[in-house]
Image (tube, rainbow, N blue to C red; front, side, top):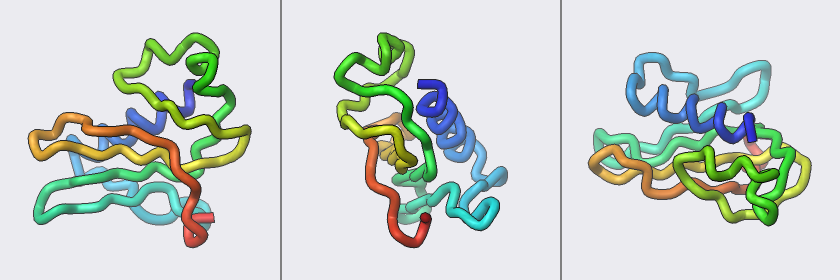
Length: 104
């Protein structure tokens, strides 16, 4: 749960102030990817997020503390959290995805 919150905080920091960009590689692994639609940030992917809970039990009962819901069920591995934004800057979607081969 803390790792999901942390990934969300990193994505929102990046969205609010792109000058603090963390896009690219950290310690030889890809950390964050930013997708633009025109001049606006459309999507931020935070990679190598270790998930230690399951959506089926609402992330150990802590899921209500998130400002979004993630319904994907993944095991205890590193995943990519994908945050998609509306044109007004509000969060449209948050989901768990497999890590792209280039980020592993």
